[in-house]
Image 1 (cartoon, rainbow, N blue to C red):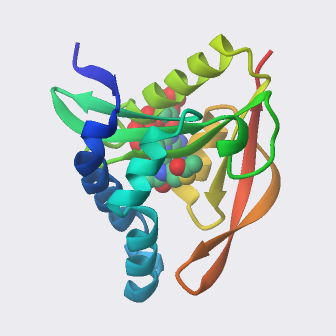
Image 2: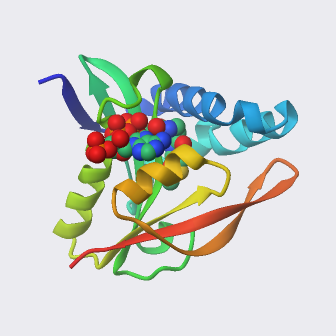
Image 3: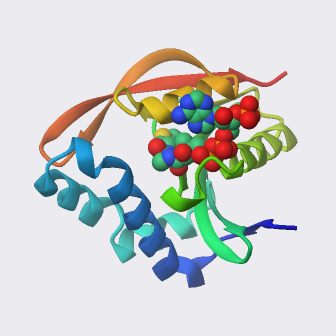
Length: 172
Ligand SMILES: CC(=O)SCCNC(=O)CCNC(=O)[C@H](O)C(C)(C)COP(=O)(O)OP(=O)(O)OC[C@H]1O[C@@H](n2cnc3c(N)ncnc32)[C@H](O)[C@@H]1OP(=O)(O)O
């Protein structure tokens, strides 16, 4: 099969840093200053930070492969690792990032379905995420996948406070 998935471990820290920086940069470089981008990349994706997140029992990372090449990744949080206090019955998709050249091939949907399966197996009642209000592609993707907006929260990008839409899908 062309698509495969692998759960990341601490050995994947460098590869995770590489794909995290690459995909974040190509997604947001046109709408943010280089200073703010660099500040965020350094803060969010330095090796110590990623090692800490990979060791967190309430976070999980996955790589998705397309024809054996890493095409994107997924980060999930539960319990206290969630970016907002959504409670024990919720699962957060903190990041779904597909490299540019692999987008629109069904890989985002594949990772989203992986998140849904994990949430249902853990008897979660809802799955949620925060997405930048200006990220129209991702918002359209999540709507297509059945998420609805339910509130907002702040997101700090360098010296700028940005608005994230909170989007939720109920699981019954
Ligand atoms: C919580 C967060 O991580 S927010 C940040 C999200 N990530 C990003 O913005 C990074 C850059 N973008 C990406 O990584 C990807 O484009 C994603 C994750 C948004 C979508 O993944 P893709 O692999 O491109 O989408 P995929 O091909 O799986 O599309 C699934 C469905 O959504 C639809 N879709 C995807 N993008 C769009 C869009 N921009 N507008 C409308 N529909 C869309 C597809 O048509 C498809 O519909 P179908 O099931 O009826 O065929």
